[in-house]
Length: 428
Ligand code: EPZ
Image 1 (cartoon, rainbow, N blue to C red):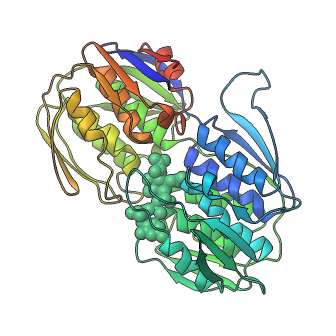
Image 2: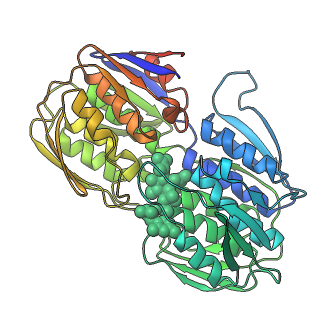
């Protein structure tokens, strides 16, 4: 199993290019199931989760071709063409769905296009329960008959989907994606209230509209979808990754330095950048993206609650916590989205942090002097938190189980080395 070794204490200076967003690329790839014509996606990141979804979609009959964006054979952003001319299976198996929850989302387009789907329940997850009850509530409203057989959702809509009024009791990104996709081909109008407003949902809506869907309300919590008979092919560019950008922004402050995040979209990250400024970092919007600067002076503590967009994202909570171990006071970080997203705390304690947990609230007592040691990555964003801590720590930090990182960060060692970090992957 690979590990990552970081020698802490090096400033970061230079430019990091932000890749396409994992959490936008995945639903966009799934949406290719809605049309028999090809969907071409530019700026798809080279990530383990993208490869896994490729396997799942191929199993359903989608023909997928991929080439490097610049045609130079470089690793990095890629162009994917996904062609679902014939869907040959409507089954998404446990072996694959249990490895990545986003694969459950195929249930929406499969029902819209084929009138049936048999999709495994995703099973357990490192960050919380993550049930699928709201997906099923929404699909039932669209006229789908659902039963559960041997761990699989067996969903049928032999006479097609019928538009409905769906009100989510809480904000859910995945169920919004799934219902949106399903409703594009439903008969009549669907209204989704309390829809997720995450930029990745907006990116999916833009692409679906480019494919001929009729969706209004982009960026708002009320989406109105007028069903159409068919969708056609399109070419779409995946949105830049705000979580990757936020991670490198926080890393720059933790290590000190001056880094341009090329292609970062500041308007999608206002809460994150406000929080960083409050802590004492310099965040400047420039033509090419966002410039982050920090001179190493003592940071101020912050109090943050994670919330759906436009609130502080849960996907940056762990990384912010790593930074706050370095502040000059006591920070409070409340996780309101997932019930178990504090697995990184014990690993930060191993590096010398002083953090106490009480339910959803982590109290981070700053002014700690982190010292490198061996730590274990427990999930994707927790791994990024340990990378940030390792960059700031004295001595060597070795992070094991880094396959988690490969799910969501494209070439992280290469990007951080290019701005001065001493970080390398040890194959094992
Ligand atoms: C998406 O997960 C993201 N994943 C997550 O990113 C992100 O943390 C999350 O949204 C919140 O922003 C992708 O986009 C691939 P939810 P998703 O449905 O859609 C509860 C990362 O690190 N809920 O918005 O699965 C659920 O348990 C990942 O990149 C129900 O109760 O999240 C959670 O508490 C991790 N019933 C809350 O809603 C349901 O039927 C929000 O989950 C559905 C969700």
